[in-house]
Length: 455
Ligand code: GDG
Image 1 (cartoon, helix red, strand yellow):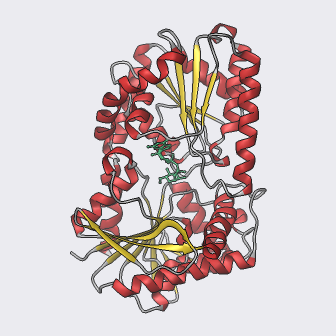
Image 2: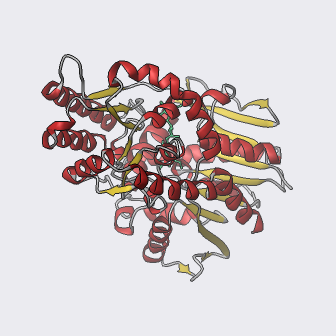
Image 3: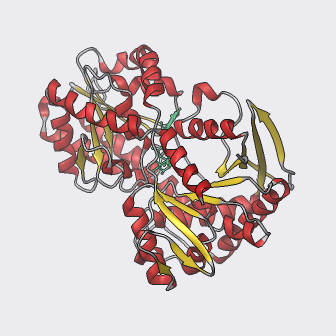
């Protein structure tokens, strides 16, 4: 079996694996370890001068990383990737901008990464590329002569054709995606949207099995919902339970119910709408005041982009307004926290919370929803309140599904969650846990890699 080369915008930092690495990184590291693999991509640093590719080995995996200079970072990362593709793919064309120079930078960095890859690519290597930063990466590799199997997995949603069409070079981008041998999506909805886009905008033939035939090349498509490691999470949550109790004791007391949310601070996660829903809950259910504690953990992300600074300001204002309205000497309804915690604490916090409140406006999958379910005590589980617009909603049918644009509906679901009888909670949780165990992170990567290798 040839080596596995994983390519992603960001390579997870080497070391400190146990404490902080998320499920995705652990799943990918496992696959690379099995196949003697290489993880290749940006090291997260912005440099003033060009830095050569650095290689570091750990536990049988090579981390091959490179820095980006300021212009590349601005145009490729903050620009076209995160100010054009990210908002558009999350249906926020109101927040998207297009700048030709940024697009040129995006293409330039993809070409530069392909140049680097070619320096160590061997003929029997299999290449697995991740996410929207790298849509034209396979095309750049093919231009440089790579004949290897190259697969791509899109972690975020794929939008409807009319939305894709708002990106000026959309046809070029869609064509470039057809240089991949296999394209993986989180849900059937995403895959369908991609195939419709290709059929409508490129005039390329789409076959019934979901493959696309263009210029002598066949690109297969598939649905691979990303999963978690329920076994690991159960261990982490049991270990983190006391830790998280100590942290929350001061705020939750013994009788208060806890509602928890954890998201990167991103406008796609529906945080403002969620805060408003909590406001509505307290407004319409006075008996819950003093009795419920909402903990929102939201580590800042992409904070040099305007729309991210704006969402942060809006949230601070909302948290302040709601807390000002309802707080008492012994109770602050919303704990809004802009920092990150280690994984065990987080999983322990999930386990101690009676409701997981996961309400993105759009999300490719949403791992937090799955982690919340996996972290519960099966004997006394909490209830997941989940947006119907998260990919996870297509699998987690034991959740209370909500429309994140309907604050009254969200408040009602939260009320239902907080008063749900034990038997119903157990039944809903058992069904969802079974789904998580069957379609876990190992199954996700094995299915994708088997399909890619099969060719
Ligand atoms: C993209 C897609 C798709 C969060 N805060 C802390 C922390 N986290 C961890 C969570 C979870 C991960 O980060 C976030 O994953 P999500 O899936 O919720 O969201 P995105 O970052 O937007 O991920 C998404 C995903 O890719 C995978 O395909 O599901 O739809 O947008 O694991 O637990 N981890 C730690 N401390 C924190 O404070 N340790």
